[in-house]
Length: 300
Image (cartoon, rainbow, N blue to C red; front, side, top):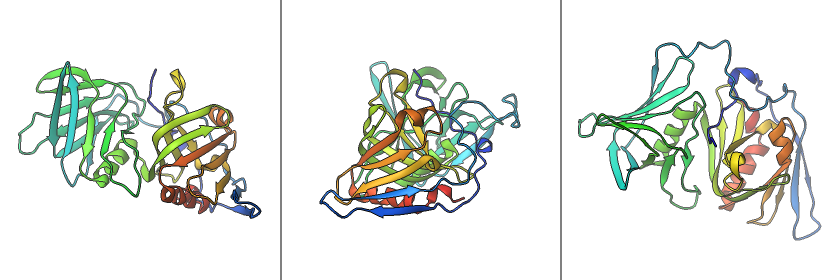
C-alpha cells in the first residue's frame, strides 16, 4: 500500500483567474439553523482525475539535478530509529535535490560547523511524497511542528545506508511551512486540525488529522487531508479541488460540522458525494468557511 500522492500537473489544469459567484440562503426558523451557500458552476474546463502521469512536454528524468534551498530561521531536529536505538540529530541547512522534471530525489541536511555528518533522505520513484503533520494544528493552542512521511525510505549518514522513517521537528511554524512548500512546490494557504471528517458515500474518512488548502503556481487550489479511518488502499491522502465544491452548509451553532456537497467530476468525488467536517477549533472552521465563500479557490 502506498501513501504517495500525485498532484495533478499544473499544465493539465488551465484554470483562469475568476471570481467565485454564489448565492446565500439562510434559514432562521429553528435553533439548529444553518446557512447554505450554493456556488454557480464556474466556466472552467473539466477537472481531470488524479493521476501520476507526467507532462510529455517536460524534460525527461535523464538529466542533471538541481537544488532547492529551504529557508530556515532555526535548526531542524531529525529523529529516527535504527534497530532498538533512537537517534536525534540537529541541522542548520536543508537542500532538496530534484531531477530536471521536478521530481524529488532526496533531502540533504548539513551542518556548516561540521559537527554532524551530512544526512541524506532518499525518495524512490516519481510520485510526490506528502509531508505528514504528526499533530493537529489549531490557532488557539500550541503544537509541535513535526513532519514525517508515513513510509520508510533510504537514509544515509556517516557512510551508513539503511531504511528508516525520519521525523523532522521544527522550532517555528514558519520553518515547518517553508519545508512543506518546498517539498510540494505549492503554497500552503490554510492548515487546521479537524476532529473528524465523514463522507456521505464512504462513512468515516478520518479522525484527529489536519486539513490543508494548497495553491499551485497557476492558482488552482485543493483541500488535502489523510483518510486514516479508511482501510487498505483507501487509507491515503486525498484531495478535493475547490472548484468541485457545489454547496456549503454550516450551522450557526459552534462545534457543529460543516458540510461540503461535491460535484462528481471524477471517481473519488462521486464516491464521497459530500464531506461533513468538524474542526477542533471553531475559529479555524470560521476561517476555512471564509476562504471558501470569498472565492480564494479561483484567484491566481
